[in-house]
Structure formats: C-alpha cells, structure tokens
Length: 56
Length: 552
Image (tube, rainbow over all chains, first blue to last red; front, side, top):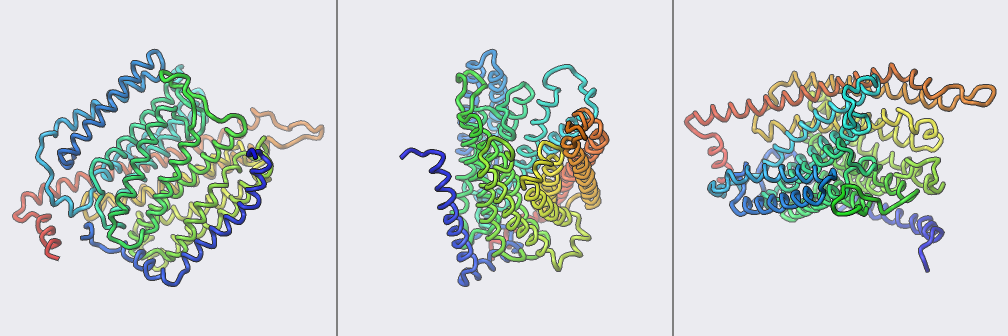
C-alpha cells in the first residue's frame, strides 16, 4: 500500500489522538508519582547551594 | 586562554583549524567567480587567524591538575562577550532597517548590499542567532556544569561549539550582504553553511550528553531538559528544512528538496519551531535556573515545570500550520495548527505563572534589584506574547493580522520583552560570578538599562499594534460600490508616524544594550584591577579558598 494523502490523514486523525493522550498520561503519571517527590524537591533546592565546585 | 588547554588539546585545535583552512581554500578555488569563493576566503582567514592564536601558546606548559576541581568557564566568558557584541551589531542593523522603512530616502549608497532586503536578515540572524544563540551556548555551559556538579568532560569541544557556531553566524551575515540566501525565513544560509552548522550542533549535543553522564546529582534539573530540547529539536528542524541540492559543489546556490505547498509547510514547521525551540525552550532553561537563583527561592512548582515542558515540546510541533491560513495548505492542516496553538497557551502560561509565583515572598527584591526585575518583566512578556500568539493563530483573527505589522509587533513583544529581557537579566546575574566580583560595576547602569529596554519595548510594540491593525482594517474596508476604499499607498501614509515611533523604540532598546556592554566591560576591568591588587597582597586569596575546599 502506497502512502497517499488520504491514508496519512486517516492515521493522523485517529492514532495521532491516541498517541497524544498516551503521551500526556505518561507525563502526568511520572510527574505526580509520589515516589518522585523527594528527588524533585532535592533538585529544585540543590541549585541554590552556594558551593561552586564540581562534586567529588 | 589557550594556555588553559592541555598540549594534546592544542594539537587537536591546530589539526581542526588546519582542516578548516583547507576546506576554506577548496571553497575559494572551487568557487572561483561565485560568492562561494568570498566565503572560502573568510573561512581561510578565520581559521588561519585562530591558528596563529593557538600557535602562539603551543609550547606553554601543561595547565595545572587543580583545574579539574573547578568548573570550566572560559568558553562561557567568551560566549557572553560575543553575545553582547552580536546584540549591539544586530540591534544597530535593526534600527537601520526601521529607519529605512520610515525614511526610504535614507538609502545612502546606491548598492545592493545597503538595500532593505539584504540588511533585514542581517538584523534577524544577528539578534536571534548571534545574540540569542551565543547567550544560550554560554549560559547552557554554565547551567549544565552547576546543575550536574560536573566539569565539562574536555576543554576542546566547548570551544569547537562556540567558535564553530560564530563562524556559521559570520558566514550567514556576510552572505546576506553579498546576496547569498535560500530565501527561507530564519533559514537563509546556503547549503555549505548548513552542513557546517550540523557538525557544530552534533558536537554540542554530544558534549551535553557527555557532561550529563558525569553528573553527581541523581536527577537532571529541569533547565537542562529545556536546553536539551533546544539542541535536539533545532538539529532536527535545521536538517529537514535545509535538505537541498547545490547547483554544483562550486556554487553557493542550491535548490530545496521540497516544492510548492510542501515547501511552505516544511518551512513554517521549521519557522514556528525555531520560535519554539530556539527562542522559547532554551530561554526557559535560562529562566528556570537564573530566576530562582537570583531570587534565592526554589522554583514554585517543580512538577508544573515538568508538565509544561512536555506540553510545550509536544504542542509546538504541530502549531506551524497557523502561518499558512487561507493558503493552498489543506484546511484540516490549518485547523490542526490553529487548535494546537490554542492548547499551547496552557503550558505557556503554566511556565509564566510558575516563574511569577516563584517571586512570591521576594517582591521586595524585584523592587530593589533591576537584574531580578529584568527576569520578572521577561516572564510577564512571555505570558503576554504567548497569549497574543494563540489569539493570532485563530483563523478569523489571522485574516486581520496576517501580512500586517501586528505580526512584527507580536514577534518583538516576544523577542524584546521576553528573550532579550531574560537574557540581559541572566547575564547581569552571571557576569559577576564568571569574573569573580561581588557585583556588577554599576547597579545604576543596570537600572538605566532596564528602563531603556522596557520603554523601548513598549513604544515598539504599541506602534506596531496600532500600525498593524490600521493596516489590516484599511486593506479590508469596502465602499458602497463594493470596491476597496483605500489604495495600498493610503495605508502606507497612515503607517508613517508609527514607523517613526518604532524606529525610536528600537533606538531606545539599542541604547540599553550599549549601556549593558559598557557595564560588563567595566565589571571585567574592575575584576582585573582587584586581582592585581590581590596579587600584590601577602596571601593569595584563591590559594586560601582552595586549601579550605580541599580540606572539606
């Protein structure tokens, strides 16, 4: 089957939707996963550390 | 600075510069009688000149091992200076072309290079790629090392990225003046410059990944995600949109692989994502590091910053079609572009709101500190211009705004209000850290710059809103007999006062950038003097600090 205009439109109108929903769900699960809270908090506060040398 | 490179890195630099000089020679010989030859000579002179700089320190001793316990900031320092030099040059040409629009008789020499069509891309590339790009590269090296707590893996590749990128900018800007262009907006440079940029950009991405692999922090801070999206997506956009076949390898001219509406769609998929990933994503990375750092408060919601990252990354990809409303592009693709542009408002405002909420509890600092105020105003303009962008992407609104100065006003609300403001704010925070001084030379000059920049932006944007909407309305006003009420020249006459106001607003903004350069230059001088004075003292301060660190 050749890739013609109609088939590209059909794929983007159907699977395109599901792919975006799956993507959004994945991101939300990762972001709101309770176990990730600790590393996020560390990440956002550790940039305020005044030490200006590479870690050992 | 060359003495900071290891001996083998100096050899590597000489080898690469030699290869580049040979490439320049080949271009000069192969492109005889073609503009390509001019670029060949530029590449040759550029690489030979740098080659002499490296040669002059070739036999200097190896840099001390102690350098490995510090971050590598030389490329960042040079990048800051290059960025400011491009800012002044690019904005100067901007004021020039604005003046040409207000007073066309100003074309003082009757030669092609001084015409609007050739100067305008020098302005756009000068400020976007020269000023913005160098600021992104310089700050990304700084942010990457600090947030990873890791030094850059080697000292050669950051220089390759920074200097190689500036060679690209130089080839681009000089090419426009001699008439070399692909006539694709923001992608004007021809095939050989494009190939060079791909090489530089891949080296940039590899350097980023290698440093992240060395990180001592478990989590990759969100600013790096934005910088990486900038690097990765710009590579993809650049490669696809510039797929072209040169006439011969001895010719500057090439022909795009795409034609017709596919060409238009590819170009605006590129063009809009250049706005998204060059002018937004990278600068958001800047904002997510320097704003919390300067305010002394962590980002309001880290989770929100991640959600808006993925939102921006995935929505923007589909928004480009809004540049082609009412064209031969299929209606459904236009609607898709419009819809995604509207949804895009959500992650955009999430970022702007996150930045402003971070300042809660630090508003007294915003009042007193012009550096932080630059960043705050940038976040406000980011919110404003993303709202305006979503609004203008609506097909009915676009029928009024498209092809008018409203678009130009919108772009500058983003470019001056958001991109330049966050950059200046970040640079004012960064310069004292990089040159190890307590503060900038003059806080009052920062204050002056802030008000010049804000006044310039407001004057510019209001002038273009007025001019654009008047233009759009005049073009669609019909009289009783059903013909157009105004001729095109009528609309030009109506726009004239706004064009003068725009040139004035631009001049204010340029003046601010010059003030910034003076302040940075004086800060560097101040740092040098302080270091000399210290060297005369009894105990070397840095030795002391190093000893205390090592004992920890």
